[in-house]
Image 1 (cartoon, rainbow, N blue to C red):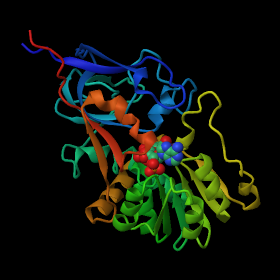
Image 2: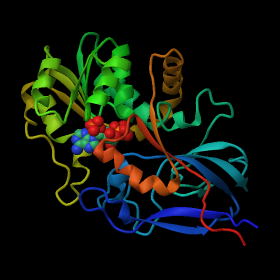
Image 3: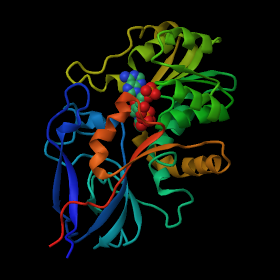
Length: 348
Ligand SMILES: NC(=O)c1ccc[n+]([C@@H]2O[C@H](COP(=O)([O-])OP(=O)(O)OC[C@H]3O[C@@H](n4cnc5c(N)ncnc54)[C@H](OP(=O)(O)O)[C@@H]3O)[C@@H](O)[C@H]2O)c1
């Protein structure tokens, strides 16, 4: 008889500096049984996000830190396989904070209740973690609500070939903006300009990247969709026009600064002298407005006006090492782990 097992990744240490996969410990436990009011979910795809690194740190951010010894927090999509609650029916797909594990127990009283997905999804399940999920919605609301680019304005996007950036750039093109992406390799830059319609792309690893950025923005910058922070943010702020907008979406270059805290740009005073509006935003605040935005995104996707791309890593055991991709820039588009069947010795 096969005994089903639950692989789980527990946070054993707080990260210091760059994320080290060794701070997550793989344990194998029996699959839990759902109690009253609970359902058991088999996880299928796990979303890997830069914010996973933030959640591992000691400081509270917009969510409390993952407790030491606790299962690593993560967004995943899964299928209900047993249920003691009418809220989650067997065979339904659900999306939410299901964690880095094969199986999750969910209940009506969870701090972050999972969302039930429609039975007939008009897109692959992976899209619920990408363009139709949190990352796509971050691009949508960040750009349209916070950045508000006008026709002919220049929008600069850092981490432009990633999950959020690649979608934000395409939406900015739909708004008639001139779109300049910043990415980590020439291959990514070519993808942005040749396939996604960006007007220009700058490789942040080129020695003359600042000069390239300036040349790509002959009329200055009106909207900075900021994903990187650090020296990239400073370079963009130096090019910004009066009354420009900074969409402070993320600061990935700073996520390893646990001891010092995340540093702001040294040319912060540009905001004052150039009358720039900077707004930080967290996508969780927009969840009630997702349905309409998702319909619009789907409409664009079906017409080929927004294209989504995924880097899919196979096997839950690969998750810790795969997360490194977000920090060394290996991923194209949305990084996802496809959860496999546990192959630990189980026969009895
Ligand atoms: N505010 C919100 O609610 C919200 C929601 C989701 C995501 N975010 C933020 O949005 C940003 C993008 O997230 P994502 O999920 O779409 O990840 P992603 O862009 O798919 O992956 C991260 C990318 O960041 C770039 N990067 C890594 N280290 C960097 C560094 N030191 N300097 C500059 N770039 C660096 C790499 O691309 P290159 O090597 O190509 O530059 C890497 O591929 C992150 O800052 C994330 O925290 C915010």
